[in-house]
Length: 99
Image 1 (cartoon, one colour):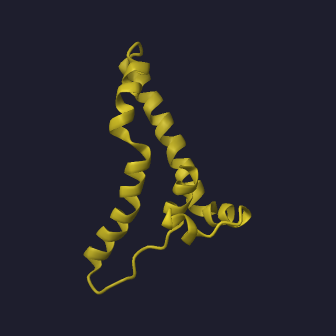
Image 2 (cartoon, helix red, strand yellow):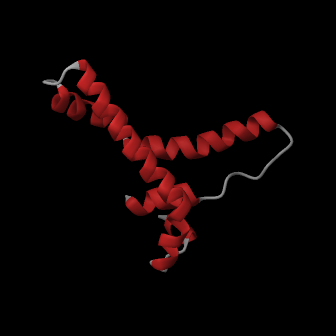
């Protein structure tokens, strides 16, 4: 799963075309959809709610923001160092894309 995250974040965006709105939507979709599948928010919701049921609303918000910040740092980190990690492991991105 970690390798899939690295590859999906290091893939090249679609080739530009003349319609800027279509291009922007294609880039957003090419990044957001794999992240949605990886993070599985619907499947993780019951676990998350069960763990936080004894916390106040303020504590729940603080915990959610902290975890979202950790996820953002992790994703942005792999965006910038994903190719380096793949190079260190001697794995080509095309190999993982096939899998």
